[in-house]
Length: 483
Image (tube, rainbow, N blue to C red; front, side, top):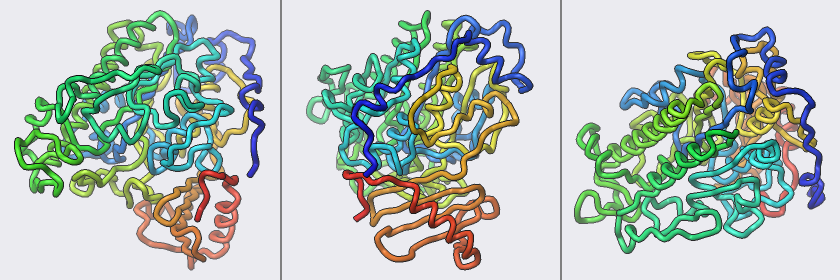
C-alpha cells in the first residue's frame, strides 16, 4: 500500500495567490461568455457556495432531465438560470464512497473510503470543507454524513465543518422518523418519534437548520453542504405530500413489507401501501426544499454572489418498494444503484451563479465528484499541494472553450463479487466479479449509451489498453480489498 505520512497532507501548504478575488474571476472569464462582472458582489466578497446532494435520485428523476410522470419545477428553475451537465458522474454507486470522493477530490481507487463499511475519513485527508474554511468560509453540513461517527477522526467537525446537524450514521438515515439526530457532538432526542411515533420528520428539521445557517451567515462567505436523505429508502413522506399523489399512479402495487393498519402507519421500511405516490411525494418535498433555499438566498440579496450546485450521490435504488423502471428513473441508461453501468453512476448536475454562469445552457463536458474540490480551489485562486484525481471544471462553468479533460474516470465497488469501471473518452470498460478471470465488457458510450452491446471482441487492442489502465488505477487499501 502506498501510504501517506500521517501529517504530510494535513501540513501541506495551501497557497493563496496574491491577487484580489475579482482579478481571479476576470482571469478565468476573459474571452468567455460570462459578462458584466463589474457590478457583482464577487469583486468585494468570495461567493457563497451551496452544494445540494440528493440521495439515490436517478438521472431521469428530474423533469429538466426528461421525467414525464411528475415535475420538479424549482429544480427546473435552477436549471433555467444556470448550466445543466449531461455527463456528470457520482463518486461511486453507493453513498459513503461517493461522499468520500467529493470531499477528497480522489476517485475510489485512491480515496480512503471505497465502500459502505464503517471506515472513518482519516485525519490526514484534506477535504473540500477544510480548504474553504482555511480561506475564510463559514462551513456547515446538514443531512447525512456517513464518513465517521461522532468523536472519530472522520467526525465532520474534525474534517473542516464548523457545524453539523443530521444523521451521522448512514444506517440511521434509512429512517425518516428517527429517535434522534446529531447536532455537532450532541445527540438530539426526537420525542415525537418515540415508539412508532411520526411526530418529527427529520428532513424538515434538517431543512430548517440549513435555512437558519444561511440567515446567520448572510454577511460573510459560507459553504453550505446539504446532503439530503431524500429520496433514499424508506419510502416515507409527510401526510400533506402523500395526499397530493395517492391515486395518481397506476398500477400502485403495495410493497410486500407493508403493515396492516392505517395507510400512513410506519412499516418495516416505513413504506406505504402506495409506493409510487410515496416516491413522487418525496421528490416533491425535495424540490420544494430546493425552492425554499433559492428563495432564502434571493430574499437576503445574495443571489448574484451565490453558487448553487444540485446533484445526486448515485443512481436510483430499488429498495423499500421503489420502482425506478416505472418512472424511468435512470433515463435511457442501464443499471441502478450498486451497478457501474451508466444508470448507477451517471447523475444530474446543475450549477447556477446568475451573472457569471450563462443561464439556460447545457454542457457535455465529462466530469465527476472528485472534480468539485479542484474546481472550488481554482475559483478561489488556491493552489492545492496534494495528489488529486480531479480536474477543475471552472472553465466550463464560465463558458470558456479551453477546458482540460480527463484521460479517464475510474470507479470500484466492493460488494457483489467486486466491480470496476473505467471511462476513457467514448470508451467504457466494466469488470464484474473481479477475482474471476476475464469478465470484461466494453462499450462505446457515444454510439450506444445504453450499454447493451458488449464489443470487447471487436476491439482487442483498445480493450487491452483499457484493461491495463484499469489495473493501474488503484492503490492498495487494507480496508477495501477485492476478495
